[in-house]
Structure formats: structure tokens, C-alpha cells
Image (tube, rainbow over all chains, first blue to last red; front, side, top):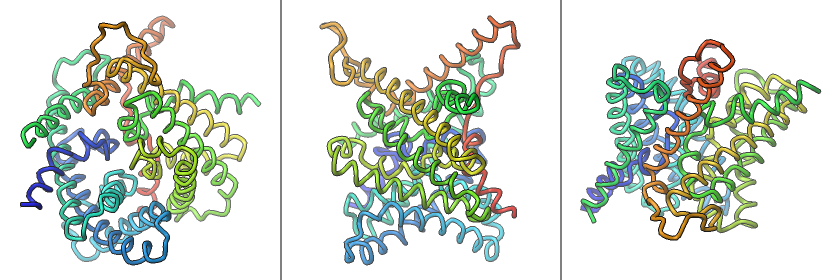
Length: 191
Length: 228
């Protein structure tokens, strides 16, 4: 039950993009078509999970015992950057079909706030390892859902008679605002 | 000298982040619930951006092209840790308000983007001018967006009440939806202004500004890396 609530909360109530604003750049940058959105979302789920699985033990068993918590940011971003490179090489060699669908998006992920954000957030919230992994997975799914929804909307917006000055990013942002309002309503449903 | 002024000024209007060039959206959306938070984040970014441009441009000839993005990230991350520690020591309330977005300055595309697009190709003085211009532009934009949201959402600016007595603040504006809508409307306003200006000059009306990840450069840099 605890994990169920954590899942629902991370996917809907505290959606990582629409409520917590993490990963807004790729949210705007890669949401022009739904194929791209699916690929990006998949890559984010994958890397978030891997990054959490590595940074959690690193923080608990290396940084904390040595009193180096203040190095958290620099260690985490290094881990994520090298992890992304590594995952890319690994997928290219071992699972080419997966590489074909995710490969293009992997390099973009190093500078995705969502991955680093989740890694830091689980430490700040003091989650256990299993809980951190569940949170990472749920956040990734939340990102995927938000991205797929907005990309489908933007595909429609392309053919809609939007006022000229609002075309492109402005209307996408306003759409995201309305989506964010909808996601806020989940808060009321649970509480 | 004129080049110096040009590099400084372009960040203030022509390439004003994030309104003209959509960079570093996460902090733009997240910390602008009040003008004060926006200004605080802006100051942190000015510091990190100026220092990172300074360091990167001075050692740009030593950094091997293949691992330059990794080097930029390490330099930025060290600076961000410095900012974190400084804020904890001297501005703790602000540090708590900005929360997770202080360490996330590391992945702000603006900083990596300037490092890749400017500091790695230009001299120290020019890079500092570029960083100061961009940083001040970013800080001013954040403060502006923060002030707009604060006025509409709480009726105050920097905590000082400015609206009439019976004004009912729309709490919507200081929550997440207000961030998206507020930024969207400001971008539309920029578009309208551009159109008006070029029409007045008799030039061709520009196509809609369509910023995005493409402007970032950092991601593109990593992409290059892969191809080599």
C-alpha cells in the first residue's frame, strides 16, 4: 500500500514535470512529435533507474561515512554523465534494437534536470534503497506520461488556428499550464 | 572595445535568456514564485556563469576536444558546490526556498551552452563580458517573471504590498500552472513586439520565435562527441 501511494503520488500528484518543474527543457524541446516523445520518455525512465541505483549506495556508503556530503552534486553529475556514455556504448554493442530506439536521446539526458533531480531528491527525503528505486521508476513514468500527452496535443495544435504570436512555444507552455492545473486536481482526489 | 560592448549587450536584449533564447527552463519556472526568489537564483547563476566562462576560456587550449563537455560539467559542478556552501553560510533562508534548484544549476543549459558556444572559442575578457551580459539578462528576466507572478498571485513585489485593498490575489499564479502560463504569455508578448518592430522598420515580418533545446549547444556538443 505504501508503494502504491508512492507510485500514484510520484506519477500524478507530484508529477515531475508539471508540478515539480524538473526536466522542463526536454519537455518543451522534444515534444513536437509523439514518436520522439516516447523515445525520450523511455530513455529517461531507463537512465533515472540506473542513476538512482548507482548514486544511492554511493551516497550512503561512500560519501556519508567519509563526511563528504557536500560533494553530492559534483559526484552525482559525474556519475550520471559517465553512466550515460557507458549505457550508450553498452546498448550499441549488446542490444542494438533498444539502442536504435533510445540511442538518439541518451546524450540529451546528461543535462536533463529530472535525472539529477530524482537522485538528489531521494537523498533529501531519506528514502530507503527500494523506495528510491520505486520513486525513480514512478518519476520516469510520470515524465513519459506528461511528455506523450503534450506531444499529442502539440501535433494537433500545429493544424489549429492559433493566433500568430502564440504559435510554437508560447501556446505549448500555456497548454502545459492547463495540463499542470489538471494534474493539481489529483491532489484533491487523494486528500 | 566595441566587440566587448556588443558581447555584453547581446545578452541583455538580442539573445535575452530565457525570453529570446529558451534556455534553463527549470529554474525559470520553478523559482519565480516571487521576485525575491527569482533575483536570488539569478545572482547564483551570474556567479556560476561568470566564473565558469572565466575558467573555461582561460584553459580552453588545454582541454582536449573529445572530453570538453565532461570538463565543462566538472568545472560547473565545482562552482555550484561553492555557491551551495556560500548560500548555506550567508543566505540560508534563500537556500531553503530555492531547495533542490541550487544543485540543479549544474544542469542549467544556459551555463553549458555558453561554455560550449562562447567560452571555448573566445578569449577571457570577451567571455566574461558575454557571461555578465547573459547572466544579468537571465537574472533580470527571472526577477521580472517573479514580480509579475507575485503581483498577480499574492499582490506584493519583494514582499511589499502594491495592489489596492480589495484586490483578491489569484493563487493560481504562484503555483505551477501560473509559471507555465505566465512564461507562455510573456513569450507571446515578445513575439508580438518583434513583429511590431520589424513592421515599423518595414522589414519582413519574422517567423515565430521557436527556441528550444536546439539553442542549447551542450546537448549538441555531446552529439558531436558521439560522431567522432
